[in-house]
Image (cartoon, rainbow, N blue to C red; front, top):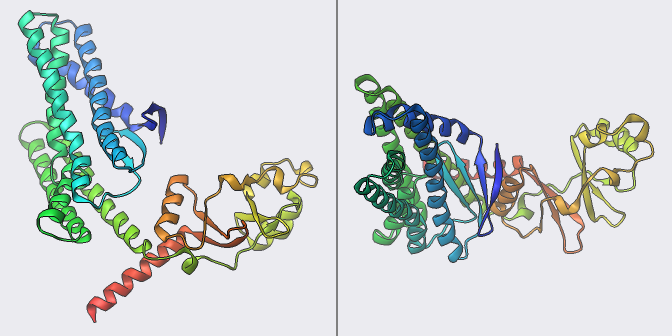
Length: 380
């Protein structure tokens, strides 16, 4: 669950609800531990001012880190859907994988480079404020910001997906060892899983030997790297399989459509109750798709009005539906589903006539069949 807070260079910036948790933790940790250790004998108000300001600058730094990825990707003509800031930092939702190793390296390295530049700026401000003996509050904020940006840049350079270092490793494997993109991805994911186990192991060791909180964070980071690597591998394999399939080969042509002029009462009695489905496409007399009606939309209308109101009055219009032509690739259909969070794709011809439908289950069945076939072929 996230909320959009604005746009930068046309890219939507969203905040995930988990950001509230980590913001409070960072501010508390700075105010009660980090700042008193480096700057003793200050007031509680000063420590909390430093803590809150440090947490704000941390997330501004993460935003700039992710924004740099997005700007470089945009320069290569790759669309960036959004940037999401969440508990472990941020992610740039880039529409497609740059299969060119040079482009991937530049996009991936832009983030850590930005973090190191920010660190140098904050370090310079910290040194200047310390020399001039400016208010310790400002000095503390600059010191923390310099340190955290170095850590942010260094952590992201770990050669593990979904971190920037994992993408840099893949780009290097493709360019230097001449491996194909699939092989390089497999190797980079495996390295990432190994690194995640190391982080988790060091985290447990830290808990029992020195710092409980630091150990927990290392374990969480290790879990994040491992789950991210495995999730990326699954998504990559799914996309690779679906990119070789055309929608016409997997669409369901035995669909049931409701006439557009039917009343809500008639649709409920003749379709929803009979076929026990939660949604139906709506077509006009020429078979052209005009919208979709769901059971919830019908039931949300008062019973006394269902006999007079037609489904056109409450349906989801065609403009808001996921529509592709029959020659579209399976991965394009999957991307549309993911972006809209809808489980249905409508397949129409050039005149807008509905000729088939594809559901998330259809796509997953194709992936399962292809994976099973690959295993059988390898075993044989």
